[in-house]
Length: 187
View: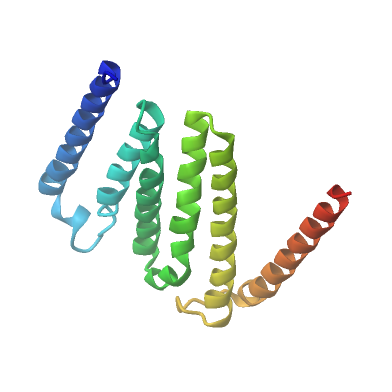
């Protein structure tokens, strides 16, 4: 079996794009004013994580044969976005539950995107399930750690106190509705 010359050309093209993007990131780290990446503001450094993540994601969405890059691309991009939010608002204790947005949430988003690009309904379905699992874990653990333990040191008042019970009620209703729908569909 002969190697596909178009696939090799696509790989070389995207490797070139990736190398150019990494070079730009490194040049930006050298020439961007000091206060942007270090010092008082520290708002720009998460871009050093987001940009490679977006690059991998774009490669996975557009290049043939490398759709698998959608998963690490989404995970890396989500890590950078979480770090940007945590850095901007000094919310680093939220790592206690933000991990759920990366895995399984980001993995699910990457699988869903990969399934969309490759035309695989099974991959899209599994990705959607993982995204839902990640969102539920994030909300549940977030409600516990913020509503009960206040790990970020912020007081969210009555809304923060009511969040955990409301999430628990909604999750219980979701499970009951799902059970009723499953029971109604079986003979």
